[in-house]
Each structure stands twice: as structure tokens, then as C-alpha cells.
Amino acid sequence: MNLKIVFKNTFVLGISQFISKLFLFFLTVFIARYLKESGFGQYSLVLTIVGFFNLFTNFGFGTIAFREISKNYSEANKYFNNILFLRIGLAIVSFLLLCITVNILRYPSGIVTAAYIYGLTLFTNNIVDLLTSVFNAFEKMEYMAILNISLSLLTLGMAFFALKTGHGLIALVSISVIAGIATVILGIFLATRHVYISIKELNFNFCRDIIKNSVPLMLLGFIGLLYFRLDIVLLSKMKRDSDVGLYSAAYKIMDAFMIVSNSIIGATFPHLSRYSKTSYESLKKLFKKLSFILFALGILFAFIVFLFSKQIILLFYGSAFTNSILALKILIWTVPLIYINSVLLYTLIASNLQLKIVLIVVIATVINFTLNFVFIPQYNYIASSIITVISESVVFCGYYYLVRKKLSLSLI
Image (tube, rainbow, N blue to C red):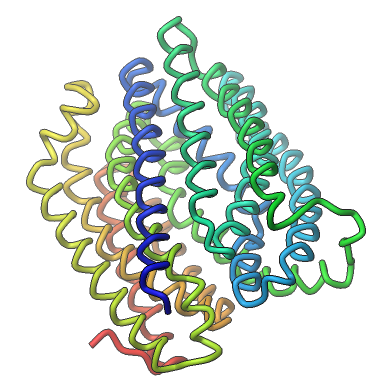
């Protein structure tokens, strides 16, 4: 493994994700301050609903492209075109299912309309995700950085203008669509050095094989999204929009810390994939280094945020979100768990053991749903915060068991 390349890619990914997440975090703060608890709750709900269908469109194709192109660059164009074809087809189906679902759930007309509009990002987000997988596989993280920062900056600028001029939810979701289209155009332009769109590359037998390999990842992603977002849906049906907003405010801060783990894992995943085939000792060393670094960072971040939760909430959201402080104090302890779980997860995926992961996430999701359903009526979003930590602990136990049993890897 070339440490200079890994360091460069980690640095580029970290900086780009930091900048883009910072822009999006400021966007979240603006939206929360302008729309208040109820409006912010509606905005979070729309993003959550569409997010479920975004996972179905993704279908795990991005990870497959990332892993396989990393192993063989000559296959890049073949994977790119066939996955692009599959994703566009799935986006059409997902959008239709989204329209049906929001009507079945009988949400207010404003939320339904916003979901229709934001649903168009099912097309743009998944094309950008595919392009990102190609850039990552070629270890051209600077291209990914350009896409991330461009999308975030464009969204932030237009959203800030919209909020300042008195526009609300519909304008915000429309802006996301416009920014997505612009980013797709830029991404295709940047990708021309490595891949190009060609109908001649389409192969239905190859598409069938991709789908077969991607199904476990799709199930994992979809169940994982249920696992992470069912609490918001349950809150929206069992409590008020303001409660969704208060919980989402704390969750957004916790989620901002995923920049670190995403950057480090993104830069090292190609090496995990190669080592899983070529060198067990190298895989073992890299696994232990990643585990130690990420878990130590996770504990550090959690401790700092726990101590300064009040100041953080008041600084970014204002006194209207004071009730988010306790939720943040609890949720932040999922960070070290998510960090170590990301190492375990991608080590298993790199070793083509994604099917084994699904059962673990299903169990954690059932636990998450059951506990939220039982305790939200009495304890509101505080229950959801505690249950998130419990669920992530269950995932850790399952992932670590698999890594020990199937790969004979240990954290110690």
C-alpha cells in the first residue's frame, strides 16, 4: 500500500467532505432558524421519505462498481454503462412508488407536493453516486471533492437566497433538484478521462450478474436506512412536527462527524478490496490500524460534544432548540460505535461477505422499530436517542462476530 497515496486521498476526501458537510450544516441551521421546529420537522420528513426510495435506486451498485473497478481498471466502462442503465430504470420505478406511498400515508398536501419535487433527486443523486464510485476506484478523490463541494455550495447559495426572500419548503426541495442537475453535468464532464457513455457496452447478462451481486448490498442499504430513519417516521406519525425537528437538530450534529470515518474508509477501501484477495497479513494490519484510529477519534469527539452540548445547540440553532440538548448528549455516543462498525462493515464487503451482514442489520432494525414503537408515546425523541445507541451496539456485536468467525480478524 502506498501510504502517500492513502494520505493524499484521505486528506482530499476529508477536506472536501468537511467543506461540503460544513456548507450543508449551515444550510440545516438556516432552515431550522427560518422555518422553526415545525417547518424543520416537515423538511426533515420529506428528506427521510425520499431517502428510503433513493436506497432502492442505488441498489448497492455504487459499492459493487467501487470494489470491482478497483481490482481491474479495464472493466470500468463496462461497469459504468451497465450500472447507469440499471439506475435510470430503477429511478423511474422508485419515483412512481414514492408518489403512491406519500398518498397512502395521507400526509398533508404540502408534504406530498414537496416529496414529488424532491423525488426527482432520485435520478440526479444516483448518477452522481455512480460517478463518485468511478472516481474513488481510480483513486481520483480530487474529482469527487469537486463534485461534493460544487453541489453543496450551489445548494447553500440558492437556499440562503430563497429563505431570505421568504420562500419555504417547496423552494428548498426545488433548489436541490436544480443543484443536482448541474452537478451531474459537471460530473460527466470530469469522468470523460476514465469512462464514457456508450449503448454498445450494455449487456443484459452482465446486468443480471450485477444485480445478483448487488442484492445483498441493496437489502443491507435499505434495511440500514430503515434502521437509521424509522425513528423519524414513527415520530412524525406519533408525535408533533416540532418533536421531529428537535430530534433532527441533534441528529444532524451527530451525523456531521461521519465526515472523518467516511474519508478514511473511502481512501482505504480499494486497499481493503485488494488485500482481501492478495495478502491476509496486509489486510490484518490495515484492519487493526483503521479500527484503533477510528475508535479513538470517535471516543474523543463524543466526549467533547457531550461536555459542550448546550453551547453547541444554542450556537447553531438558538434557544428554540434547547430541548435538543439532552438528545445530543445521548446520540453523540453512537459516533465511536459507528466509526468502528464502518471498519468492520467495509472489511466484510471487501471480502465479498455482504450477504452475511444482512441478517445482523435486520435484527438490529427489528429491535430499533419495536423499542421506538413501544417507548416513543411516553418518552418521545429521548427514547429514540437511547434506542439508536442500543441498536448500534447490537450491530457492533454482530459485525465483530462475523469478522472473527469468517476472517479470523481481531481488534486486539
